[in-house]
Amino acid sequence: MEVQALQMTPVTMHATSHLGETIEKEPPKSFGTYLKDALSEVNQLQLESDKQNNLLAAGEISDVSQVVVAGQKAEIALQLTLQLRNRAVAAYQEIMRMQV
Image (cartoon, rainbow, N blue to C red; front, side, top):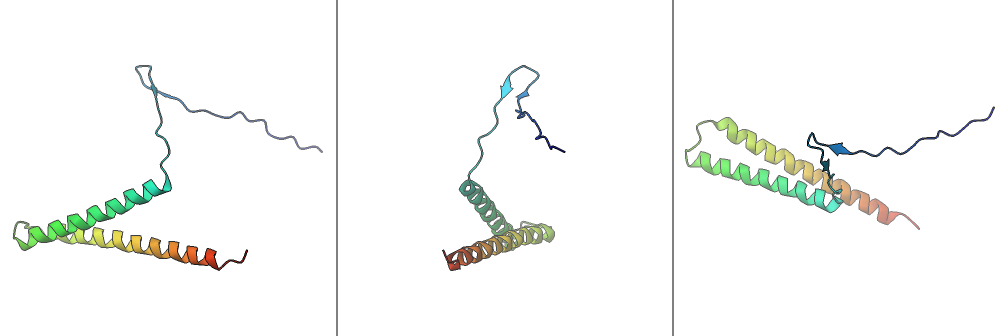
């Protein structure tokens, strides 16, 4: 019994609006761009937490739960960032220990 290879044609995606114009897709982002965006978002969460704490200290916030939620978001984002960094460093060290 002979097995035949599948003959598949490549699929191209084109999006058109109701006006008939073609929508261009975004160029793919590099890893560095993703990393920079993620670190920027963690920084924004930290700054928002600091701002909420300052407003609470000034007596301008009546709902303490907003401050707690902002603080927890910032803390979780920072912990995730630290764990990702630790994993990346561990992977780098493992690669450097490999013998060629």
